[in-house]
Amino acid sequence: MPVDAVEVGDLLLVRPGALVPVDAVLVSEHAVLDESSLTGESLPVERVAGERVSSGAVNGASAVTMRAVALASDSEYQQIVRLVEQAAGSKAKVVRLADRYAVPFTVLSLLIAGVAWAVSGDAVRFAEVLVVATPCPLLIAAPVAFLGGMSRAARHGLIVKGGGTLEQLSRVRSAAFDKTGTITTGRPVLDRIVAAPGFDEKSVLQFAASAEVYSSHVLAKSVVAAAKQQGYALLEAREAEEIATNGVAAQFASDATAAVVTVRVGKPSWLREFAPTLAPAPLEPGELAIYVAVDGRFAGAIVMRDQARGEAGQALHDLRLLGIERTLMVTGDVAATAEPIAARLGIDEVHAECRPSDKVRIVSAVQPRPLIMVGDGLNDAPVLAAADIGFAMGARGATAASESADIVNRYDTLASLPLAVRVGKDTVRIALQSIWLGIIISVALMLVAAFGFLPALVGPGSRRSSTSSRSSVLCAPSDRARSGVRIIADRHGRSCGP
Image (cartoon, rainbow, N blue to C red; front, side):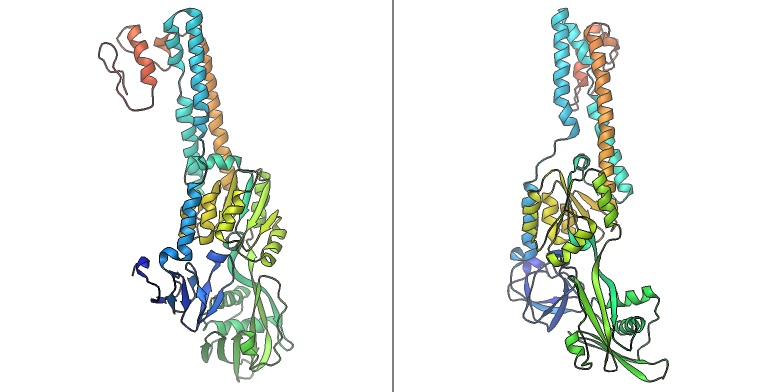
């Protein structure tokens, strides 16, 4: 049914991997949700019956039921969409490159033509100057350069939504980053294994991964992937059972004794019932532990955390070489998790536990400008719209973020960010070279025409015809007008062209 048709009190079925449509209260006993696009918290969040769930969160691997407590128009997701619209409406308009040169060039052309008329006393001299006052450098050079820049960016997976964005990129001085899914991968990975006495790291990870194959928990895939990456073969279970909200239990045949081994993987409170010697693993901010017990003995803990992207450090280094003076991390995650990552990468300042409106307020006050904001989640959509340049990590980003950004990165890598800045600088440099070269040639020809050495008939902007020179002079200046597609006739009624 349409989300706008949901009424307060309706019972909703949210399927695995589906977006929570409206703010609701969980009715099912347990749910695991990905709230990273809303809060910036990279690790899955567990909710129990009676807890409130915000719209925009992504359900885990099990279908759950919820009861709506707000209409779609009043829910968290819609509030963020409205914030995007407000931010986009308040964004300053960019003055296009050619427009900055058009008025001075026109004034200069009229001034030279007027002086030539006044000094020579011949009105034809005024027309002769204007004939060669060609605006082609402004009409052609800049658009062609920007089209080339956008094409070059597209070859590297960067969708640039306008030439004005390339102009802003060429002058960018500050950069702000979201953390989860932008600076970090957004997917928990193995950090270390804490093995209990009598067990080694290999056996702990191998047993855990073999049991987690039968779990629907979102972290189970990360454990299995870590074991496969280490090259450990998964054991085939004789029997397996997932205990909701707690973990998974599986039975395996031991290679050495052929005896049946029972492995339990999950929460420490649950495992302590079967393994009283369980000892909590020491954790740093942003880490979580998955505990393992084998035949009633505590085997160890698997510590996982969200890791910074491998290319993040080099990308930030390249940005500084390209003229970025100030870098910020603006995240919804807690400071204890964000600050160590920012310190390792050399990010200047950290703003943690930010809601979408907080991000807009912080970024709007940052100096120097222009500022580029890099993000991927739903909660980044308003600040992407408010920043001078919004850069969306579109490979994993929410639709709202991609729609509100000025640049969408189709590839899930930060290496494209300095490339985008470099393309912007190269594009504007080439456009300026073309504009100035064209203006210099035009001014030189205007000066030659001002002294009477360049008749209107041989001017680059004139149209040759079989009419008199006076007819050509009358047609040519009007024919140069490009403000609209018009047909101009000379005094004999013949067409001078569009």
